[in-house]
Amino acid sequence: MRSGRKAAGRQARRPAAAADPAASDEGEEARMDEPEWRRFVAAYHHAHPGITERLFALADASPYAWLAEPLRDAPGVVLDLACGSAPVRAELPNADWVGIDLSAAELAEASRRGRGPLVRADAGALPVASGRAGAVCAAMCLPVVTPLPRVLGEIGRVLRPGGTLAALVPSQTGLSPSGMLSWVRVMAALRAVRQPWPNPRARDGLAGLLCSAGFRVRSDERRVFRLAVGSADDAQLLAGALYLPALTPRRAEAARRSLARWAVRGRHLELPLRRVVADLPTGRPSQEPT
Image 1 (cartoon, rainbow, N blue to C red):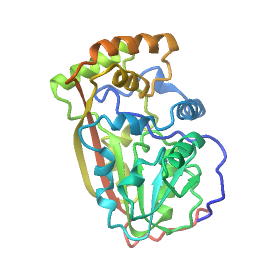
Image 2: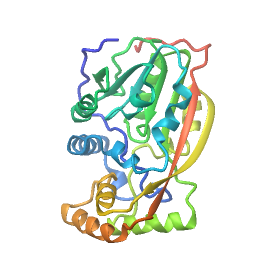
Image 3: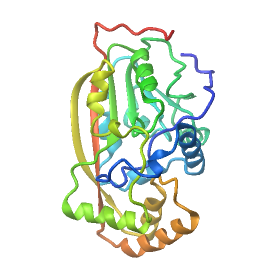
């Protein structure tokens, strides 16, 4: 692994949460071009390192533990793609794990928490030799990393034949009627119709995308977690944890006040997530990019 290399440019990374799971994918915010999106996400994670981990800490069970389950016995190096504050590291304490992210602020937060080794690099230009990894972990990043075909190509390149990819992504399905109403309440407070995604198909359609990219899908499961939103602090975290480029500071402050009134003891917000586990077929050798 060429751990000293730093990729140039900006990398759009993992979303902070699966906001508005039932919303459509069209709208003004979804028309951001790739450079605009990368600038927004880079600035967001510079200002809010570790926010995804803090939000998921409100869940009734750990999404990261669920994601890590199929990787616990993976042989060889486990690459944690767009690792952020590296919460998956704690779930794989005995693995030959390496976290990769482009955000210096997120990597600093991971280091502060004692997690490593860490490499600063772009998901679309991994400083890793072909066939080096036994597994790749992708927590909440595939709907937003760009360009996605290049990222999937890099994952396929660095995986050894038979290697495993485990990905966690937001899902649009699985909300109960009351869960849907709760999300309507949250998004109304933020005065937002939807959350934008550069790669909307890399949510419930991720299994199909991976098959098209040459992977063999082993499992595609959805699970609905429940976030406890029982205090003003929880509400403030939720209001800041969603990718909403059009959100102004004034609107954000009004949303925090509104959601703080809504947050009471026993309040929960449903969060549907999808875990897709895939293998690189043994008949497909990894190759250095041309």
